[in-house]
Amino acid sequence: MLASCELIFPAAPADDAVLDGPVAGLTPEQHAQFLRGDVAFNDEVFTSRTGLGPVFVAASCGSCHAGDGKGHPSTTLTRFGQVDSTGNLFLARGGPQLQHRALPGFQPEQLPAGVAHSRFTPPANTGLGFLDAVPDQTLLALADPQDADGDGISGRPNWIQAPGYVTERPVTRTRGGRHLGRFGKKAAAYDLLHQTATAYNQDMGIVSSYEARDAHSGQLADPEVSNQTVLDVVAYLKLLKTPVQREPRHPDVLAGQQLFLRIGCGKCHTPELTTGASPVAALAHQTVRPYTDLLLHDMGPGLNDGYTEGTAAPAEWRTPALWGLGLSPNSQGGSYFLLHDGRARSFEEAIRQHGGEGQASRQQFEGLSAEQQRQLVRFLQSL
Image (cartoon, rainbow, N blue to C red; front, side, top):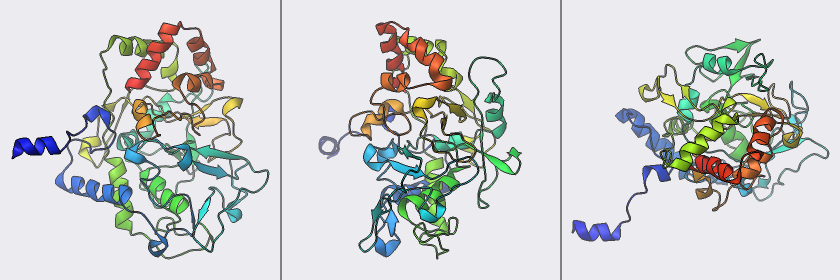
């Protein structure tokens, strides 16, 4: 009987072939909450009867993050309206996010004419709990806003107005009452609760006690999702495993890794970060390899969409984590859609669109031989 079952049921995918799955070492209670959050994130599809809309971007969390991977152009968000680093001039007209779908009887939103906007491809969810547990002080130590060392890299934090419902990290750094953001394309979200509650509200039109204003009317409304469900989804995102690198000892991967560091990519895509204290023991005091500093960097005029969030300038983007990048085609229809809006269709194209603080590394990449470029790309594909 066991032998016949083996013929019927396919083998589970290798751990390095998927992004989903829990962190090792969870308590039974944490694992149970992870599973509840998994169901709420990946299986629950909202309808008009359960609070969807009336205007929205998607009807479920998982539809934008298939397999916890990066999104596709069809699920890309549009942000608009902020013309400087202090406020949003179009909150009364649907800002800061365009809800381009609507329930019957309602009109989807349209961009106000002449308004700066940017398109955000949904990111992968992998390893977020470890990024959340990196101490503020670690990120501040990586920052060099005045480029004091003269290397052309001047990463800086995005200081944001964090909502009152977030729980501060054990050692929190603030500036002028603002908190250090770390999630989102421009690091405009403080933590995973901030990110999740905003996504329920702006992506699906779902009101919670955390984000209590209806995205369509702007008025206070009764919650359409329970606090427990929101917290379960937060736990799910926080407790997802880190990606497993594929063929880390392959000669081309090792050579590409050295080239990556040699041409300066690691100055923004910091290879290693170490977490601090965490209420989840499995996340505390762990060294991980996400290849990000979670800071803002000026990427030059080619990546300037004219849109701001928090104190981020229009050409500034948070360094995206590179772990899991090689699995992106699994959730992107078999292709790559890279950079903040998916405009780059290959690693080479993404690198060649780096300007500003990334320009020196781009130029060094272009100076590599064809074989060396192939090795560097092979390294990125292994992540």
